[in-house]
Image (cartoon, rainbow, N blue to C red):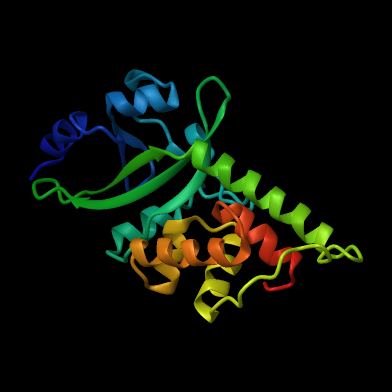
Length: 217
């Protein structure tokens, strides 16, 4: 397959898709990318990707740099897992995206390209941050004297149920928890259901807060 054929295929994808060359310059930019990032294709072609998006990770460290580790890994055929980053749109608005990487080699020119498939996860990140704040509040409350008093008796949690709640308390999403514990999403839901029953709670956030107040996690 040639690069031009690849670019044509990416035009039809629902994901925001753009391609950069080995130097980090944008070679393709589909309609979904225009909608998500706010830049029209003529504005970004042959421009450095790092300067356009200014991507940063969860701790604020730059991901998009002139010496891009993602491009280096892809060019050397090293696996690049999906990753989250905060980017800046044309309007200056910050959005969170999850990126998948695809390395491509043009058989005619022998040039390497790196395809980025980006999905907007801003709403998910807001929910995670809100959960983290609420859990922090629960931890502060649990340190106050007498906070566990007056709570109805709770059945003991299993080791796996505690582990699930501990990971959720760290701000991980259910899918991340299931992946880390190597369990199916249905199994995770069963653990949460049982934990809610034991703690007299109605959802995973309440379960985390109650487990924290009781000193169970």
